[in-house]
Length: 45
Image (cartoon, rainbow, N blue to C red):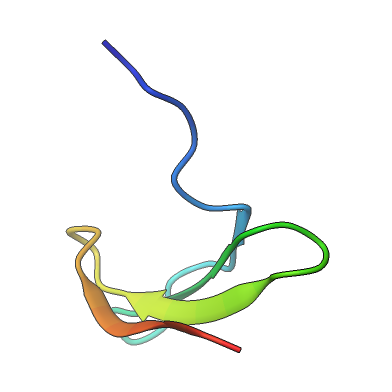
């Protein structure tokens, strides 16, 4: 069962990392994931 999207938006991968955005317009947080989907930098403002 799919539970929905994990990220609000993502950028393409560069050097094995992708910037991701989680949260809404008021509470957007940014982080970076590797190609397995593991956070290397937890989302923060």
